[in-house]
Image 1: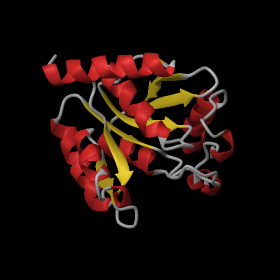
Image 2: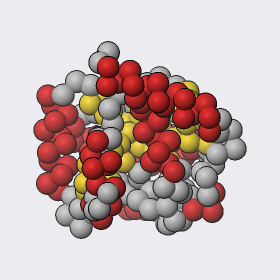
Image 3: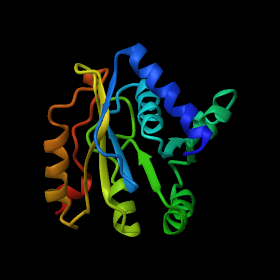
Image 4: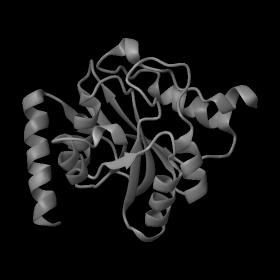
Length: 193
């Protein structure tokens, strides 16, 4: 393990202990990471601390509007990738190319797409997993138990409703930092099938 990862891990463990949060789960080596509930900007901080605690680099998709001013270098240093939500194709193609050659490879996104309650999740995580052959790992944070962690990893079956039932069951007992902002797991594609 490089000195860089050792420093990050030490910092993460100290910060989590001071904030009274704990990490749990088995770290994925190759996955499309779905993080939920996504109800606060603190979710990003907790996700980075989780990754650093387990000495893994996540390529976290963050809307490009955040890559301005003093926040931009911090985001890049933590592995964040700017995503133009109006035209995500180029970014996704580059990431899929990286997935073919990089080991380990974990790309993360907040499928809710916003910190406010919505009607549907964004289906990009599902399509990305299908296109790349990578499994989906469900990451989570739970405010009441002060836990952030890695949940189950599964390969999408292609049956969207069945796969989303698995996701709904996993997140059923997870509560975000602002519970009223959580969008329950549901994709538009489920209504069409």
